[in-house]
Structure formats: structure tokens, C-alpha cells
Length: 457
Picture 1: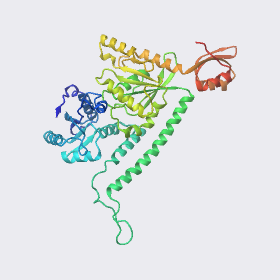
Picture 2: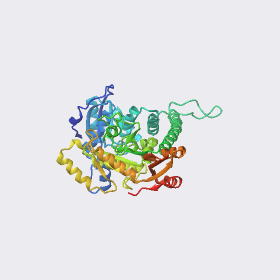
Picture 3: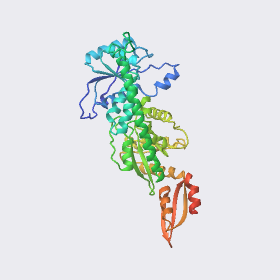
């Protein structure tokens, strides 16, 4: 067992919430072998100590008191207990010595593995998926967020009903005097969970329908949508506040923001867009959460531009980038396609001038289809350049037209304001000379109806 030094993070301010018990965090990470290329690709993308610190940060996010955090290298995953027999016995002694109430395993445990470890250690065991679900359950504040978290949690719990409750039978079934045994407790629990999941899925369908109506309304205005995505604690909410002058909660903790937020974004030359702040991603994000939060993440799917915010000062920044790209692929978005994604390298205020210059040289060599911008959401450095790039990218997909319309044509003027971006509007001799910017889908309508002329660049 390898101890882990947590001195650098022990001074983080704790929540005022009541502490939830003494915890030991275990990092059961596979040892890499020279010929095991697949395992290296999947497991060695980040340093073991950084992975364990992230797991400890997840535990701190729900006010758990961490008594110890340990790396437990393993050569292979055991079907019964995940860890080998010797490791299980070693940890048993640590649990007894530290008066541990909960063990957090930084991995995905099967129901049988979780049950066997709880028996061996005589304490509650929580895997990575369960821990993230606990965080989301505490952080969800809107009705929509609560529905999505509950759905994910029930799907997770349904597979965990492994206790032997067959002695808790209900009334006997069948006819006559020799009816068979009735419904067992575990069967009743599964049925109740299944019924609740069905109801939640129906409610979330209504949420999706409402979001579609909101998006349709924004398209009529029309406002383009810019969505923020990124690894949790990359600084998305701080950047969101900086760009929109909003006051969304931003804290130095994992998953500080859970519920999605939309605000107006003012562009340098007077244009408007909608900026969407979404839930942060994380490595090994539970599939239940990706599925449950699909209604929220549809804002990302429909966005005209996606800003991938990265904490470039983090030691595992490249691994975090791969994790975010993996979740985007799960959502059906190709991170390498089409120039829709702009990378935002945040927290450059943590570097000295020489290091910043080196980062700028690296950024300049990035492929043009996925450019990156160096910013500090805290100090505001680089924000103007980012806004200009957003405006330029949005304008590239629209056509600028000049037209003249009779001032008495109120219906036509109203239509233009609803369906185009009016850049200039001047009254001359009873007619409005206007410059508008429209999507390609509405270009022909404006040209034919108002005799508009494309502006020459």
C-alpha cells in the first residue's frame, strides 16, 4: 500500500454543513506493464497521485472527513472484490485502526464486489459512480436538476439490490390452499424503482419539450447560442460571470455548479448571443449521468459555438482534455470536426511571463480548425480577444444584406427584427435603409421579399 501526501489540499475551507463521518479513500489503480498498450491508453492518462487527489476532492465536496487516502496498486481486477485478498486484509486493519465509517473506492464496482467488500470490512463502501451521484444529489437545486439526478440514482440503485431479502415475502400467491410464495421484498423494491423511473422519464420528456420551445423562441429572435463545456473546476462559471456580468456560483471545488444557466452575451460590435453554462465533466463520468442529463446537455448539442474551457495550469490538463472529448463523443459531437469548438486555456494568471509566452507559442501551432485562446477569467486577461473570435465565428455563418423598406411597412420591419440581426437602421425620405445579418436558411427569403443586396466585403 502506498501512502499519499495530502498536505497541499488539507487547508481548503470546509462547508458549514455538518461533517458526515470519517472516510478512507482508496485508489485501486492497475500497474502498467510494458506490453499492455490498451491498459496504458485507458489507465495511464493521468498520474496516480493526481487521480487520488481528485477522488479525495470529490469526497470533500460532500463534507466527508478524510482520515486517510491511499494508492493500492493492483496487477489485475478480481471479480469478487476488485482488490486481491492481501490488499483486502491490509485495508481491514487500517479501517479498524482509524475508526472508519465509510470507504470510498476510486473505481466502478460491480454490485457483487461492493457487497463483498462491505462484508469483509464491516463498513459502508461507496464507489466512484456512487460518490458522484451523492454530490449531484446535494447540488441539484432546480426541479429539472433534481429529476435528472434522481433518475440517474435510481438506475444505479436498481442494479445494487443484491441483499438476501427473500425471507421478507408478502402474502402467498396463487389459488387454493397451496399457492406459491408471494412477491419478495427485493422484487417489490425493483418494481417500485421501475415504476418511479418510468414516471421520471415521462417528466423529463416534458422538460425536453419545454427546452425545445425555448430554443425555438431564441431562434426566432434570433440569438445564437454559445455553450461552455469543460472539466469540473476548470473555471467555467468564473468565465461565465466575466463574459456576462452574472453572479453564478463559482467556487474552488468539484461540481460547484450543477444546474444549467443561460445569460445574454454582448459582443464587441453590438451583437448579442446566448451563453450557456453546463455541468462540468469528469473522468469516468457515470453513464447514468450522461443519459439523465441529456436534456440539459442538449444546449451543447444545439450550440453554434462550443467553448471548451481548460485549466491549463493543472498538471493533468491534457488528460482532462481527452476526458472532455470522450464525453462530447458520447453526446454525438466530434471534437475534431468543423471548427465549431474553440479551446479556452484558462488560469494563465498562474504563470510567469516567460511561461505565458511559451504557452502562446504552443497555441499558435495548434491546428486552425480548433484554435485556442489564453485567458484569465479572474483578471480578465485575453477576454476581449476571445469575444472578438466568438463574434467573428458567428458572423462567418451569416450573410450581411443591405435593403431599403418603406417606413409604413410595419409588418415587414417587425419580421426583420424577429428573424434577422439588425446592424444599422436609418430613416431617409420615408424609407428605412437597413443593414441586417441573417442565417443562410433565411437569406433567400430576405432577398426576395425586401429586394436585399448582399454586402461586398
